[in-house]
Image (tube, rainbow over all chains, first blue to last red; front, side, top):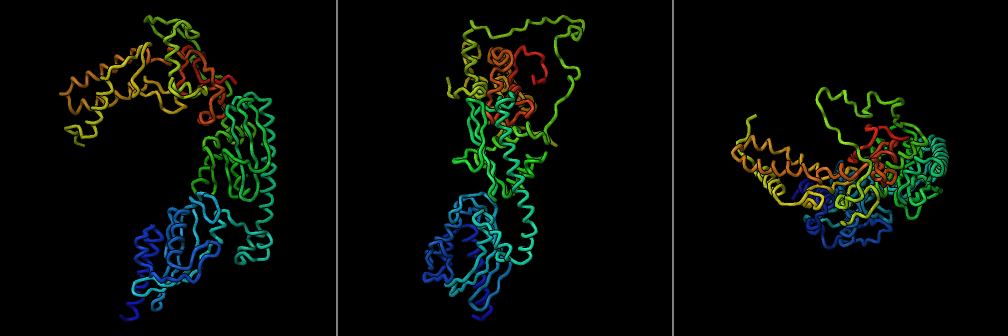
Length: 359
Length: 143
């Protein structure tokens, strides 16, 4: 077999591993492609993986559990005899725990360059590096310190300079958000004491939290029995419902936007904004804040509605005679059958907080 | 587009379903209860009542009649059963028993409030609450 044939065959084996094993989780192909005496010369520190075939299989399995849709895009491959160098970008969604980071459901991507040696159609050796720092940053497992950014330790010069230029803005957004959330928190707590239309919405006991990845957090406790709201700084433990933003700037934009609902939906779509608990609680909470921050609030008609049907008008019936039954004001207490059937209306029971079991 | 000459398998299954549903005896008076397959379980905030199921089932009948007019006995029987129920207590149970403004209007859970415009939360009855006799019969909130 000539040099070109060896290289082409090696590239085909490596590509198949990337696409079928890493990209689709086909471990029967893994067993076919990896030599039993395989050696990984660059194991990832801290993962506890052994530098052999079993270790790689364990690593692939672990990654697929953390990123179920894990797949790669190969940008280019170079082959030198039986060794193949591949530059690729991995993609996935963080739906499982990865290196101790709980699922964030964010879309991630990171680059990797690796070399694999292929002999007799089997992968025998591996050397490689992956941009795991980028991955950890995307899932909130690592944040570059200000000192590191300023001294240019965490990226190229342009990125560091950009971070330095953005620092005052981040500080401003951080402070503004803390102030905004504090004011909102206190105002909602006060409103639950004095504004009936706010009290009327506090119908269930639950906790709601707004937090950001750069360290701002505030929580609200809704007491359905007392119809009161209390607030506090920091994260709630446990949090029943939470809205988490990637940065203070993003949170401020949403809080002060008339299009908050669309912005939240966009954030969820792009994996930057996360919701824990119930989505309805987020939309309900933001509606509640609009009582205090009337940005984007829909105004009702100021005057009476035009031509409302307020009472019966005999003239509207024309010349014919229509018998109008007298209006009743309450369900007859003696009509026991009707009361019994009424109790079976689950839609009504749901609105009154009654148990939903069949009576 | 050429009109179909026969009901396809899906339509036949549908017809069989509504036949079974309409002809299964149940008591829609105030002494009985509709068979469980009549809808009154749809999730809030819509208050769903069996009454809504009657017209929803009827929509398909004219279309089927166009295709297979010879099956008139079956279609008429189904329509008769729907009409018979339409005159019953359960077909208007909300009008009969939910009198006046909803007393639980300020106790709706947040998942229901989220569907109501913020301005009207706590004072606007759930969609479907007909509230027989409510004045002023328009969408004027009290605050």
